[in-house]
Length: 300
Image (cartoon, rainbow, N blue to C red):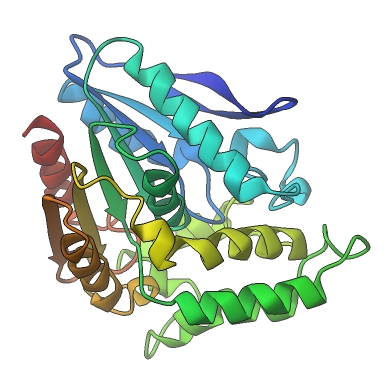
């Protein structure tokens, strides 16, 4: 059964999420979600992990799930939200680890970029790290995109959807799937999963200008060499992605990350690319082989 928890993002801001507790747990798995989704979407994954003796904590970011009062309030991010969310993720990890069990930090999609930033901000803050549905190596593009967001977003339009930045950030993913039925087919080969996403009022909401400005502010930092060098060489990292995931440039982004971390001297970096899967590898029809690999990594 899922119960709500909350952690501080700043002195006067809290973020909420769900905790699924296992009987006779052997480890903790902490998750930060992707963009335009929410923590309770991980219910099936969490219950599977519980059945295999893993506690699961999943945090909603600003403007998501438990942190909004209605669908209309989604994707509104306060000033410096990216860094505030990193602090909240770190506190989630500390909260989970207070039971004395090994603790693994996992981020999916947007959450994977935050997890990349987390291991720069809090080196070796957890026992292991999982990056799911991620990308890397686009530092110049992120610098340009952040510069555009600073020009386009102001106090008057901050909390309103930004069609231009939305198209810039996500528009290419839909077109990466030939003969698509919907603009969300890039998420998954599983048509039922895509339909559930489309039908859910707490998924796929247009991002505000403020969201894009704050998200891109964080993205403009994570692949700078000075920040990459802050990563502990003692990290244990698993990178997982679908072979047909446009977010990761069809596997090229995860490969770049693995190569970069190894070149930095990180001792333990594992990469798994899954054939026949797109972005949401935790929700594909063959998802249990991903679950099994995650469990094996946690227990190793």
